[in-house]
Amino acid sequence: MAAPENSPEIRVTPVSTKADRAIFVDLAYQMNAGDPNWVPPLRMEAQELVTPGKNPFFEHADVQLFLARRGSEVVGRISAHIDHLAVAMDPVQGFGPGTGNWGLMEAADDAVAGALIATAEEWLRAKGMTRVLAPISMSIWEEPGQLIQGFDHPPTVMMGHQPERYRGYIESRGYEPAKTLYTYDLNILQPLPPLIQRIVQSGEKNSRIRIRGVDKSKFDSEARLILDILNDAWSTNWGFVPFTETEIVYAGKKFKPIVREDLIMIAEYDGEPVAFMMTLPDLNEAILPMKGKLFPFNWIKLLAFLRNPRVRTMRVPLMGVRRKLQSSRLASQLAFMMIEYIRRNAVAKYGASRGEIGWILDDNQGMIAIADAINSHINKAYRIYLKPL
Image (cartoon, rainbow, N blue to C red; front, side, top):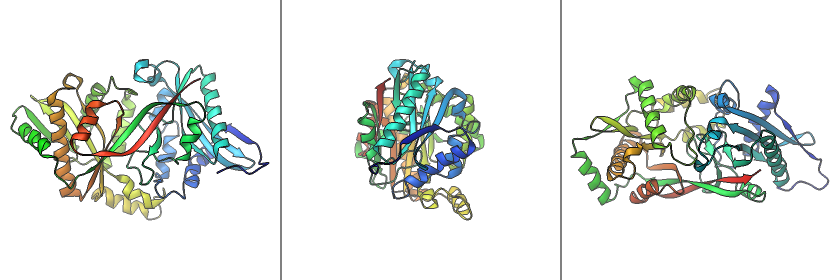
């Protein structure tokens, strides 16, 4: 959408008041209202994401939100942020010293996007940053990347959806691809390929292997176990940033209502927990029609969904195998076993017909091989860009 000739100058100003923050949140709903594949998040969650004291990301990050105006009209927004845990990571893993980020961009047109990106870059530069990875909204664990493939269907829970034109806005300003993140679509009504079934059956005969669901009555300890495996499994991955203690508690509280014991598997070998696979019913299917509002009656619908989630789609946002087993045949076998057990439960108990796995880094050959082996295919791709400052 082009700006009219002789239009007022674009002004970008920092968010400094509660009213500004409310405008910042509301703008996404306004600008994406016409996109049937954009899933409006619950407003309370969208507000919490950008509020210090609510989102524990602010405990280890400097964050500045900005609004763009053309005359009196708000026409864009962006966040600029420095995650100090990410800055402390090894540069070969993507972040590292001098690396800042921007995200949460909404822009009415190219001129607005240019003004917003330039402002975010200047803020990062003034804070001593020498490079920027973007878009990341706001933590790498939230909604990283610009959608570049898969605009024709809504994202699943915890994944983003941006207009296709934003890609041009970003790439025309000197940003080069750093990583591409894929999600994979799987028809879970079909049995896994015969070879994979034989691998699963072999594992079932191995007395050293035990695949179990999580015990929700021990939710806190199970959550910590999963995050311990995750931190070990992902510790050398590109983009990895460890969870803080506060974030562990926050994530547990956030996910507990949607956790199902038979959809999250832990694999044990000789009694030691060595791998996990987390699967979530696609909450986006329930909240898409709500337009971000719980009241007056949507809270009843959401509560009913959480009590008995019947969904088309299950999403696997996270899985991990301890590093000492990675690249081994056992690692793949455990993964296939967890996939198969979750597939059975998802179809029989929740009426699901498809799964979505990811995101998966474009150079994660192990996970890509597993995705290929079960006949899944890429349905969405997100790109994270890099630019020297």
